[in-house]
Image 1 (cartoon, one colour):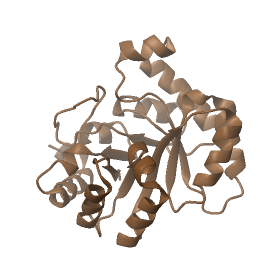
Image 2 (tube, helix red, strand yellow):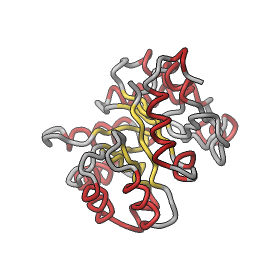
Image 3 (cartoon, helix red, strand yellow):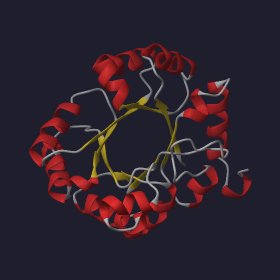
Image 4 (tube, one colour):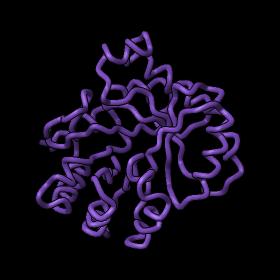
Length: 236
């Protein structure tokens, strides 16, 4: 079954922690992004765990640097009370392999996933930088991440099934930019709903604004959880 990760992307620590309190007891992941981590630091992770230690935390920093710096930073991140973090696949196979090598002896290490193509890219914007279309390059990045020993990748729903067919059906796909019931896409171009995520064999969907901008975030979260547990043909 697809897992749900709720993005803690609101403007202040107070707002984010209020949401965490509201979602206490639900079987979900929580995503701590770059802004929240820079502003609130490692104490924010401790605050979340103090509210509900059962929450799994995805630290979304998208590491991208020279291999040695990425590896040493990954080692520091593995010391935090987190369950997953990500790096950029475009940092290269050597960097990804070095990250995994430095963590190989750590007991219960966090899952490591690689960003393929940001969901804010459309094909033209992506090709301006990478000189290939998204589908082709995302698959290439995923293969490199798989061969480097990572646990999975971040991709849009549109690349998930292709990536699994090219690597392994156990290779994790995490998809941001999800609009569960076709809500407004905002600054995301390659968005999908719950039905698309199930059809494309996605393992985890990341949902932010459709939950925290809702008038009743806990109820919206439960509605999403109920829908992802249904069979595909039942999803609205």
